[in-house]
Length: 362
Image (cartoon, rainbow, N blue to C red; front, side):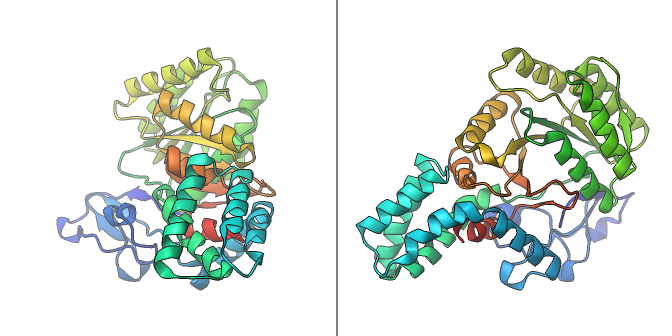
C-alpha cells in the first residue's frame, strides 16, 4: 500500500478536484491532503496524478493488508503480551491503573505519553461509566489511536521533479535496507528512481546500495572515496538531467553525539540546495524499533539538526519496546511513513494508527 504524486504532463484545468479520502479515518491530516476520486480511482490535482492511499479499517481489510496486519500483531507480540495481561481481572480499580502504568513504561511508551494515556483513560471511564477491564482496553485502543493519529501521513512524490529524499540514521538501524525497500515501493507505483551512494565513510555501503540498485533495476550515482556532499550534488544534478521522479540519497550512519558527522549531514543538505534550491524535499530518519527510548533521543537530535519530515521504523519484529511510537507521538510527532518487520523487500508497509494501536495492545 502506498501513495504518492506522479508528474503528469499539462492536465486540463477542469480536471483539478479533490474529494474526501475513501478509506482512511477522517482527521485534520487526511482532510488537508489532496485525495483520490470516488471509488479509489486516481484523480488529477493541478499537475499531479494522485494515486489514492488505501488503508481500510483492519476489520474490512483486503487479504493482502490483513496478512500484513497479522504479521504486525505477531511482531509486536512481546509488547502486547506485557500490556494485555493487565486487563485479565474483573474490575477496574487503582491496582489495574498502576499495573497498566508499569506495563506502558516497560514498553517504552515514556513518562509523558503514559501519563497522558492514563489521564485520558480515567476521564473516559468516569464519563462513560464502564466497569469491566475489557471495556477499558477498548477505550485504551481508541485513545492510543488518537495519540498516534498525527504520525499517520502518506509520503507524497511528484510535487517537485525530481523529489529529492535524504535518508539518515545511525549504524545498524537498517537504513540502506530500508532505502532498497522504499525504492521497490516507488518503482512498483511507476516512479523512476535514482540512488545516491553518499555513505562514503563505510567501504561496504556503496556495494550494499549497488546490490539494491541491481535488484530494483534502477540507476545509482557513486564515487569511491568521494566527498558525500559532492556525490549528493552530482546525484541531484543527474536526476534533473535524466528526468527522474525521485532521487534517494543514502548518507553515512552516525550517532547524534558524533558532532563532526552531524555537521557533515548539514553540509550535504546545504550542497543539495545548490543543485536544487527547494531540495531536499524529504528528510527521513530510519530508527531501530528495538532501541526504545534511545529512538526518541535520535529523533530529537536529527530533527534539531536537519528538520525531519518523516520516519521509517525498522526491526519491529520480536520487540518488547513497540510503545516508543507513543513517546514519539507525544514528544516529537514526526510522521511515520513506513514500518518494517523483516528483511524481505515486501516487509515494509505504510503506517496506520489504529492498526498499530490494536497490534500493540493485543
